[in-house]
Length: 256
Image (cartoon, rainbow, N blue to C red; front, side, top):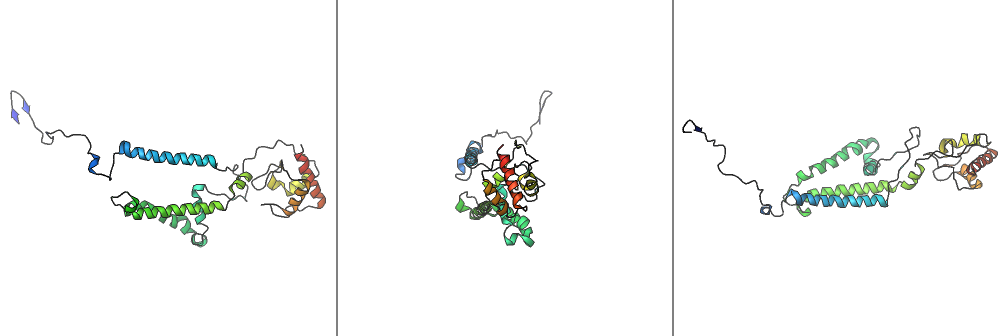
């Protein structure tokens, strides 16, 4: 402290007398081990994300996702499937070690261990190198997880005819055809066919539409007795005369 004419000067030792530069360190001091976040690292991440996004958009244009109809809570025969990105977990539950009495392994323990291992991978292999051969543990765990997901997804999707499923469950517009309930074959249709094919022959998730059918009268009669595709045999339980009336009702309705 120095005394002057009515003034006192105080010095604070906590303030450095030398001004320090705010310029960051030169990254060349750490060759191959770090880089500037802006713009180097951020630009690389943006480019990688753009390539993935463009590829994903092209895939959706080439193979559109099949859309099903509006959910019907009264349809007990409908078997729901998860979205494509959960199919590998759905497929896992089909194996004996992850189903039945061991289902807790399939829904909780195995996925929990797998995702937990991926979370721990950076800590298990935290070497300074960034190349794959310098981080073998993390690379092996990631390749194993990626291979498992791809294989389980492919196996699950291969057992489902997605196009047929989407066609059967697509949204059905209201029918503009007038149903003749006074037709002698309507009673047979109501008791044997309406549950699966709808009150206006428009079809339901359990049965295809009969409006616009390309089958002949003989083919319709044969299908009613013997079934076709997912339709089992002996769905029609009436007499031969009632079958003829039913076929005539379907044909006449389509001729409107």
